[in-house]
Image (cartoon, rainbow, N blue to C red; front, side, top):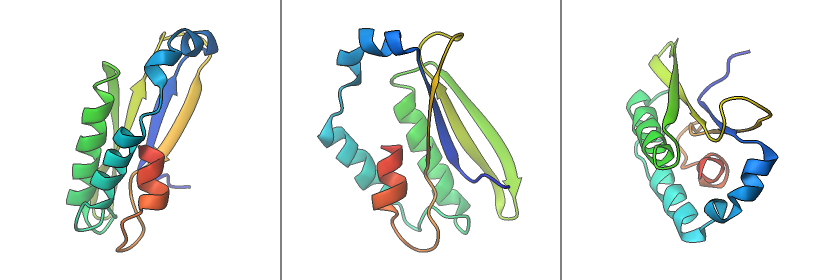
Length: 121
């Protein structure tokens, strides 16, 4: 099964999350700004518009770099060109983890705000 454009966040041990809960408070304005940015990329960020997917990837990567120095790219080729997943790791490198994934692509000519962009935000 092909996996397209999944964004994986590696989060930390439960104790680390509890210890840093103040750092992980959701900010509704920040979340809204991410959704607005991603859902307003034109042409839509779909397999038919590789350049829009790359703009989305660059934005997501830039935002993740604000919270982690451990960012990896997982690139692969599709018929339209090369695309990538972005993997950000938080907390200790070893131990139990929580994995969160979100995709930043859309299917067709739509903004994907209620699914893709909100999941990424």
